[in-house]
Every structure is written in C-alpha cells, then in structure tokens.
Length: 136
Image (cartoon, rainbow, N blue to C red; front, side, top):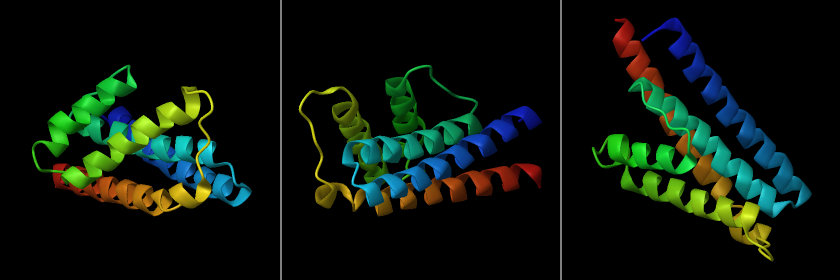
C-alpha cells in the first residue's frame, strides 16, 4: 500500500467523523432529513476507507455498498447487523434526499446516531488493526 493510499484512508475516516459532527448539529436544530443524510455519509466514508484496504472502490454508491457486502460482510469480517445498518441508512438517505413528501421524525431517527457512531468506530478500529499489521 502506498503512502498516498494510506493518506486517502485517513482522509476518508476524518470525513466520516466530520459527518458525525454535522449530524449532531443537525439533530440539535431538528433537521431530521439532513441528519439522516449525514449519518449515511459518515458510514459511506468509513466504508470507502475500508475498501481501500483491499484496493477497491466504486464510482457509484450502490457499487460501494455491493463491494462492502461482498468483501467484508459475507466473509464475516464485519457483522451482518452492521451491513444491515448500512443498507438501512443507504435506503433512508435516498428517501430523505430524493422522495417527495418524506419528512423523517427526529424522535424516530435520533437513535441512529449512536448506531452510526459505533459503525464508524468499528471500521476505524478494523482499519487501524489492518494498517498496523501491514507495517510490522
């Protein structure tokens, strides 16, 4: 793995955490749809970083989702529940951003923040472990 690839992984994990921070602010302001968007993007950036460990990426969100399941969920490296969370956030982000007359209730979705935080932290730990084992 090149230094540029490592730098991109670190950047994407930083973006994941930035999205979590943005989600917290949006939750405080009551902007549920955009809150859902930022939760998805936090997980998306984390997954994108994870895929780079295997030198994989996709130009489409659906491709990123497919590669994540194929390379990490189906192999048991990442729990199926985390894969289902990613799918749920993907689907709900689509609704929040593109469907007419969809208005998420913050009371219904506020618990997703903790789930997304755990998802990102899990992937950060996985990435750290992988990177550290490659440098030894």
